[in-house]
Structures are given as structure tokens and as C-alpha cells.
Amino acid sequence: MQRIAFLALSQAHQHLHWLPAALRLARRPDVEVTVLSGSRAGLDFIRSYDRDGRLKYRHLWAPSLSRDGLFTPPKRRLTLLLHHRAIGRFPVIVTTETTSSLLYRMPGFTSRMVHLKHGAGDREGGYNPKHARFDLTLVNGAKDKERLIARGLATERNCLVVGYGKFELVRPPAPVFTDDKPVALYNPHFDPNLSPWFGHAQQIVEAMERITDWNFVVAPHVKTKHGPKVHAATANVLVDPGSVRSIDMSYTEAASVYIGDVSSQVYEFLRRPRPCIFLNLDRVAWRGNENYEHWKLGQIVESLDELEHALRRAREVQPQFEAAQRKAVARSIAPMDGRASQLQAEVILAFAEGPAALDAWIESHAGGATDGSTPDRPLFRHLARHRDPQARPKRTGSR
Image (cartoon, rainbow, N blue to C red; front, side, top):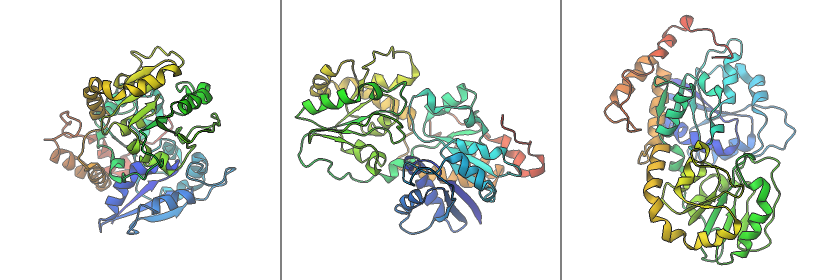
């Protein structure tokens, strides 16, 4: 029996990225999957997708100054420090966040860890030195693999493209508004250095209120902290400061047009090519800047006076962006035809079984690389050290 733990220490938006693989693994009679979380609200959210009750759950209590909620779990580092021994009893651990790399520094910790990278955006902040500490990294598309390698955070030998399992959880969206006006989703990012939301929130909402033949959903990233508190005065603008609909693709599926800045949700929206508008209200020099690579996929608005005109012509100009949108999505999220969670589960299980099983899995898929490249053969030979636990190098914080 393979015992695999999935860490659910983050806000709830990350859970949707690992849940499909966890549920698929839990269907196997030879695998036991346990979800470890510091948040009871997070565990309840995860259970809502586990209709057959196949997952096991363990609450990792930690003190918190905030009320437990989907987007306010206890602090990750504190939870890890309090419970590292319990977490370390699982031989294989899967996580979507990088704070958990702290476990490698804990005395006696010998578990192997898989980082299933969430999101598919272009922001430089999506890469940090902690990525390099994981035994195996699974990414959504070729773009992430190339960038991790270029930054020295992964190698050809420990990074694999496995697609975007979250798409398998998408449900038909319920109506957001009671009328039939077209809907535009505005999804500002939480980074105040890159998002115009922090400096222009009130003006943005007021501009939308004046465009009465459109409905707008304003859904800032759920990690937005200390951001503007803005309320809409008209029925055609819904401001959602954080709800399940903000993370389960209800809004991206319901919208006809995406308005944004640097959030990776643009790629979730573009799984079906549709018009995009990007707000450059601070006149950023974006060309040639990887943070804004996706701004090539739609119209750029530098003044809110231009927003209504951009919306009116969105459908007309969409054909000139569609080919670029399809190409960018394919690089960011490898097309899997609903097989992403299957591939993720197979790789995680092969990793759990050992280097020979993982090499065999890679060899069996060598004829059809999911990212359009030719896989290294054999991959992950460096994992051979796990055959002999005594031969494993001592882990340090610089690993």
C-alpha cells in the first residue's frame, strides 16, 4: 500500500489544482491518500469534491489571529513547524506551494516531495529559490519548465509537464446576473507593483458603472491583502472580494470578455479563445517584459475613457488575436484532452514506487511528450539515490 499525503496549507484556490490527481489516486485499491490541512474550512471545501469519500483527512491545528476561512488558513510556516513529525510519517508528500520546502530542514525528515506547480501565468514572482529544493516538479506547460530551468530552479531531469488538472473540475456556471447583457470579468492581481487596481480601483469601478449595456464582475485575486475596499453603486457591477466563484472558474466560464493585468487566470479564461483587454493605466513599458507576455493576446487600454470603445470592438478585433491566444495557451497549459489528472496520478505513483518505476513510466511515454518536446531518456536518474536511504545526501537549507 502506497501512502501519499497531499498538503493543503494554502488558500483554497490552490486546492483545485491538486484535487483531481488526489481523487484519481484514491480510487486505486493499492494507494491511500491523506489530505493534511491546518484549515477546517479548507477540509470542508475539499470534501465537497470527494463525493465518494475516498480521501482521508487530518486537521493540523495551529493558532491563528484570523478566523479560519477558505482564504485565511493558519500560517503555513507555523503549521509546518508544529506538525513536521506527523507530516514526515508519509513517505511521499505532494504540495502546490513552496513554503513546504521548509520541511527539508527539519531534523529527521526523509520524505520525498513533489511540487505540483499551480497557475500558468507569466509573472516573475511565480518563481523563487524554494522551487529548487523539491525532489520532483510537475508543471502545467512547456513555458514553466523552460523558465524554471533557465532560472536554475529545475533541470531536465526533475521537471515534467503534466497539464492542468483543474479544468476537469469545471462545472457549468450558474447565471451571475438576472439579465442577458454580456459579462466582462475584471480580475486584478494581488501584486501592487504590477496591478493598477491598487491605485485606480474606485475609478475603474465607476467607469464600469457608466457602461450600462455591459455587466461586470470585479473579482480581485483572493490573495489580495490590504487592497482597496470598493463597493459598486449600480446593478451592472458585482464586486466579489473573495468567494468560491472567484476560484472555481464560474466567472471565467460566464464572461464574454476578460479584463486584467498579470493574473494567470487569463489562461483559464483562454481555454476557449475570447476577447481580452488589459489595463495599462500606469503606462508601463510592457513590451519585452515577461511579466506582461500575455498582453500580446488582446487590446491594451491606457485610459479608462477607452474602455467602452474597447468593449464595443472586442468581438470585431478578436480574430487578429486568436491564433496567438491558442499558441500561448498551448505553451502555458499542455493540451491533455481531460487526461491531466491521469498523468499526474501516474507520475506521482511511479515516483512513490521508486526510480525504476518512474524511469519505466517516462520510457513508456517517450513517444508522445506532452509538451511537444522529446523527453530525456531516462529521466530522473538522480532519484536513484532513494534506492538506498543511507546514500541520500544530507539536506540543507540551500538544497
